[in-house]
Amino acid sequence: MNAQELKTAAKQFGADLIGIADVRNLKYLPPDDNPLSIFPQATNVIVLGRKIPRGTLRGIEQGTEFDNSFSQFGFMTLEDNLLAKTTYDVSIWMEARGFEAVPLFAYDCDGQPVGVPVAPGKPEPNVILKYRIMAQAAGLGETALNGLFLTPEFGPRQRFAMLLTDAALESDQPFKPHMCDDCGKCVAACPLQALSAEKAKLFGLEGYQRPVAERDNARCLRCKNGAIATNYGRFETVERVAAACSRACIAALEERNLCGEKFKQPFRQSQPWGRDINGEKIF
Image 1 (cartoon, helix red, strand yellow):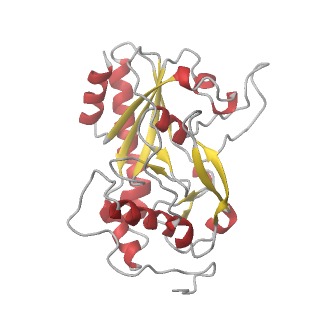
Image 2 (image 1 turned 90 degrees about the vertical axis):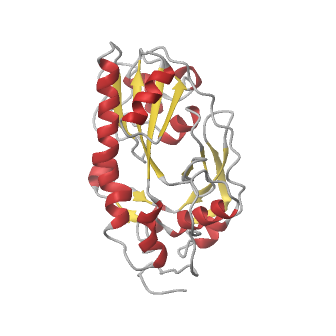
């Protein structure tokens, strides 16, 4: 099995994106964020992605439909069923060839300690990988000013999963940031002023970092502009791909002709709308 055979199989199983990160580029990460804490014999992190259909965002962009299209086909069903099936199938395909493959969802949160270390020197469970760093190391894209991950194919419109493997595969080159130009349209688009470019901090794979705005999570959790506050099963995080900050980013990327996927109609077809923290109309 080589890298091209793996990528061909992953595409046949439904992956729209696949990249391979060499764990040697990730050894600097602390134990709480390190794939070697989960699988010490791992040689690579395989990052799989399935795209979020642009059409799932249409109702939210128009302000007319919030709880059907994106929440299912762009988020929960896409992640829990379609992406999970792809990840499972790739894992089984690899293990049939004698290589262990540890499947992991790309949860958007920090580690979740639930107990004491099982041995001296080990991190507390659970180790949760920072998938944006893994995806950048796998050559798939970069983290934008708004904190969302961008790929050249789809902008912020994808969901990721990961496989840790001991297979000796040719890895991809890490992604050098160039898509986000810090235009600030994402910051300006947030009706709750939850993003601060002035307090931005560098984030990303070591040597390939770029500024990411400080985000007020408490405000995001109360956002009525397309964000989804998740439950305990997803660590009570905020899903923001359909939020005002992300939709402004999509429009800006398409204006700059930076997304590989092209459409007949522009994403932004009318003036943006906004609601305050109580859901009352602002503009």
